[in-house]
Length: 181
Ligand SMILES: [Fe+2]
Image (cartoon, rainbow, N blue to C red):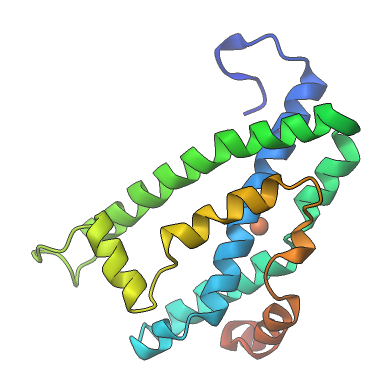
């Protein structure tokens, strides 16, 4: 939000920089996930709904395509040296658990409200997630977790994440983007 929580006495500029650090950390996950969905042929094998799959991959490609924007902005506005790096780490320390929570909560919510699953005993769980990983329908926790230490490297830059050429190629052939243009 516009103001720090609980009226914390954080100067306005610093609060802006911190929020930018949070967005840059979120973009690390969206880039990793976006790249994963572009390459996930398990989703084709599962005959996922074509329009939804195109929407998911289009969004994934778009996330890979703009993966450096927030980070570059953060590097530009976040000052120099150790304070900038420490704030980047703090941004990830807040983001990673929140993303995990949203993932678990969001997936459980979608499964609970999926008319095709209503009445079935299928519920989102660690074991269910791993079964989906096995079928190539979801990335492994290990794969998602590995995105964190990469992000914390001092030499990190989002351009090292995923494949830009694969993303651009998908944006060219996506049915939705072709229809829109
Ligand atoms: Fe994004």
